[in-house]
Image (cartoon, rainbow, N blue to C red; front, side, top):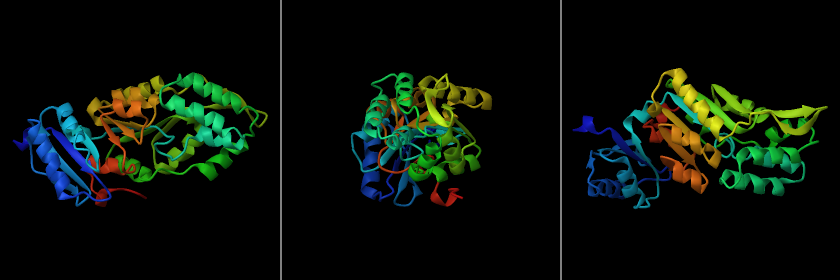
Length: 298
């Protein structure tokens, strides 16, 4: 019967996962009419798999109703053979929104950050909101970009381990950002991505021109990059994972076999197959059944 269990529910709690939570989760799945196998620890006391056969949506609903103190993943077994990983950058792979930090050097962070927040919540057209914010940065010295990156940009916890581990296991890794190339390229290289895709800021006479190259890397472009990579690699959608936090990540999250919302806006969380709300990015490795001893961090 175990061979027919093509679904896995995984609970991840790096601050401690007790046997009581595991038993409650297994009972919830069984009470939902699902055929549940024996629990298998990915990491003792931190992450556990509950293999099952049956409806994914029913399993997720049953487990979410428990409101356990853990991040929850209900995935297909095929999702664990990850061959493509596509990630957003700002507030996902790094801890900040780069355009908001750039705006701080121009003395207009509050004004720009409000627009960023609304765009990430899906309340504004992304391309229009980006163009409007970039226009407000016109005249800012080009050298401030590097200063901002050095002083403000910090990698999200677990970013390097996640990307380098997936690459070591044969996945192609792509950073696709609605932000800017001068941030995305060094960030992507530091983390270990194969490829970085982002917007080009126009510069004239050593200062920002207030415009960005067209076409803008928006929600449609992110989805297109994911689908193009799936086709180029000759893999199934189930082998592709996408992760992000904002509304502009929703199309790629929905196109991936496993779409993950990371400390995300409500619309993004609702659209995703799974959400990381408690842990850092290394939570994803445990969700894929990879114990800490097999992580690649250097």
